[in-house]
Length: 171
Image (cartoon, rainbow, N blue to C red; front, side):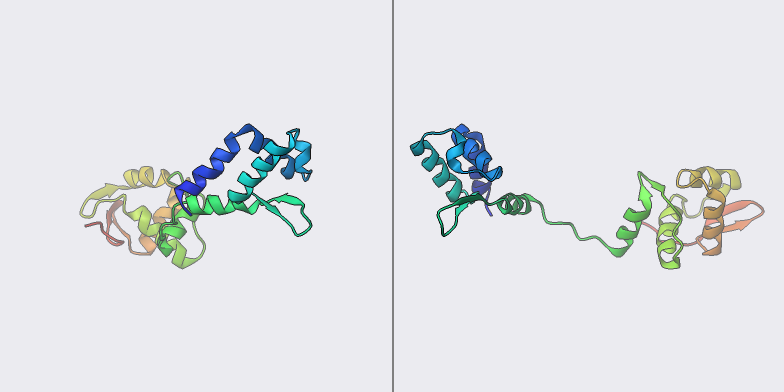
């Protein structure tokens, strides 16, 4: 569907006589109930038919083609961007950068933990307090997040000092 077709339909909706006939059809009334004289009404019906918004059945009755609006919406919508499985998991568990919940399923949990682990720079040592502050930005149960990160080998710990030891690294 082209931009010209979309502009055509918008132009039809801008014209008073066409809009009045369209309103009558939308209310499942006769086009004659639009309040227009016969010739302007027939001209408006012709324009609506050419724009794909009205159709006449075999008995001569007119009806609104509501599905035309859906066709135009789909034609104007940009194609969806491909989303990786990891991105789907992150979108379902993160809202404005915070975790709604810590995933129960391990495969989803690993995706989320990998994402969280990326706030820690490889090779940098962090105190437990610094780790807690960073994790609290993601979830109020920062202790559980810290434990999961250590258990999965994404953070290592020794003498209350933590460092990143796993997860993906951005190049």
